Length: 323
Image 1 (cartoon, rainbow, N blue to C red):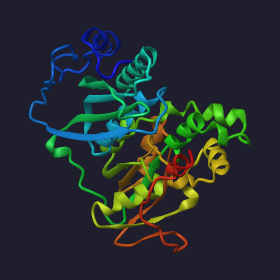
Image 2: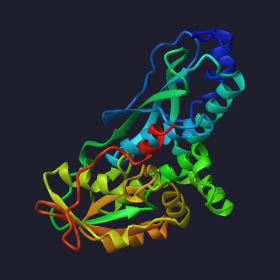
Image 3: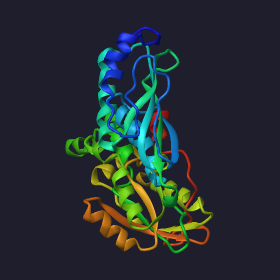
């Protein structure tokens, strides 16, 4: 495709016409000539967050762009409403690829219950692969703001460690998985349906969550540190209780990566007073969850007393550095 902004006909055909208005807060879907989106929040607080996706295959970059950003807002106790998506496309991109990404974006937006209300699309030689930068706009009533983790709180984790990393490795690093069974690789590629934490965040807010944190770069161990540090607390983690899928274990062993420090979008940490009640509420809604530790007054360690190191670079970058 030619460098620069897409012409209006191509922009509308491949992208803008695919996005629909579904939220009452939205004044309309994006269209040619509209540079701003208008939303009506009726006095609620507006919550925003912005994240790029730079390391994903084009086949699932759309869904990751939606869910990673919506998850940030949901973990803050807010309801995602709308997204602004910037697409930076390399010159060798095809219209079929752009169309595939747009359809993936819209499917994920419908699942998350948000509208895509604008953004920017450009073909540029500044990137060698499709890159996105997405901003989520969310709302929350003033009285529903989270108070923060407290010493003595249970730490509940939804789903499984290394969820996003498992998907990315299965798609992008298949050459390293020669000793992994076809069944495990096939299952790893189906895990994208679990990437949203919006459903469990709603349940957590209804059942006494003090704080939440979506597990992204740095994995579950990094996320525990960040969850507690927000309120100057510490944490004690029982590594044995952290759930890991068999396909994640297989992929991690084949690549020499630590699944507990591997990208885990789709999993949510919840600090709450009664972890057992939270587990029951989540499981009643069909969401897998486990109690993995407690918030402490200070310090970070495992239950055996071994220190828990602060977050570092995600394990996935070790594979990217070798490419």
